[in-house]
Image (cartoon, rainbow, N blue to C red; front, side):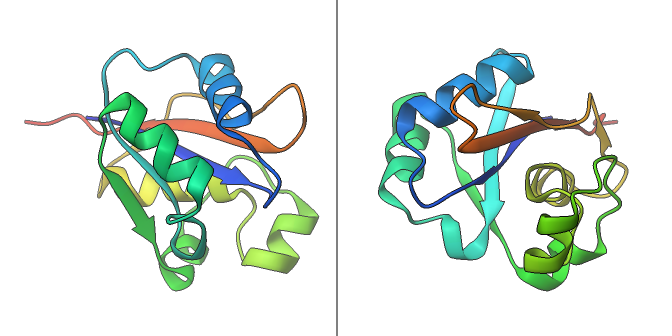
Length: 122
C-alpha cells in the first residue's frame, strides 16, 4: 500500500497538487491520497482525487501531530503541530508500520507538498 500525503495552501490548484505528486514519484501504485482533515474537502483536492480515482483519507490534527516526520518545518510545526503535513498525512493514512519513501517535495509554484508512504502488507 502506498499513500500520497499532501500539504497545501488555500491557493493551491489541481496543477499544484499534480506537480507535487509528480515530483514525489508519481501515481504508479498509489492506493489513496491523504491530507489534513480541514483540507480534505477543498475543491482542488477533491477534484484531483476524483481525477485519479483514489479515495481520500482526512487525517485529524491529533493524529497528524503524533507522526514522526523527516522534515521539520518550523512554520508547519507552529501551525499544525507537525514538521510536515504531507509526510504526517501519508504515514497516518498508510497505517502502522508505514515508512516514508522520501522526504516531502514541494511543487514548482510552492503551493503544495507531497510525500509518499508505504506499508508492506503481509
